[in-house]
Image 1: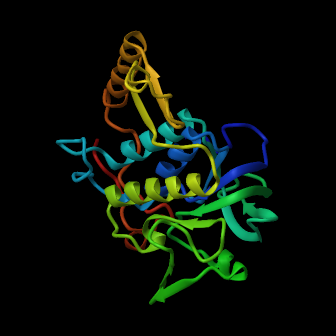
Image 2: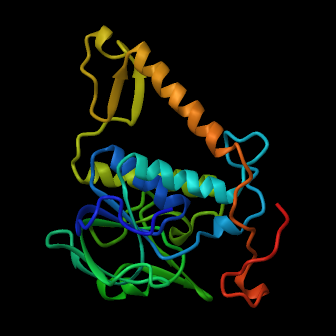
Length: 267
């Protein structure tokens, strides 16, 4: 995965997603497809990558390598237009009316320090959210953990700030994080007043043959385009699953001395 933003040196976005795990990348896919300029800032490794095998995500009858699955989520978000930047957000300032500014520091010397301007911000990172303290975002402490409170659809008490996934105290399962990320994204899309009905790709005539205009967010495609997209999908999936994933298995960082939490694993 690239460590730099996919759309170059741009520093102003309609949406900043903080956290590149399942919830964050799913949200970014939806907002980018809706036409919102979107940047994902990811501070490091999703907990998903520590799992040995992901066996309860719909669509994978025999399960899927979690590290491969994470790579596929990243590719889907960037393929649909989201930018990606590796970095650690350590400051967030502003408001919906004035716009938000996030300060982003380097992770493992991957990036230089920069400021990112965004109209809205979606928080999905599970680690440290102390950068929200000055904004007055409501949260709940539970031992060593801090959860962001929301209205059930992703809105926090601060307009323009949204939360999704584990940081919003949703169950710690990949499929729930994905669904919650999508739900928060659609809430945000509606709040931004972006014309949007549903993110559907339908066969030619599905709406127009009934005398309806194609609703915003939807797309009608003819048979040739449908076949082309299905062929591209088959080719991509065959490539993803053609070989064993190269990234080694990791365990919980507290169990090993290596700072990356790696363990040897025979492929």
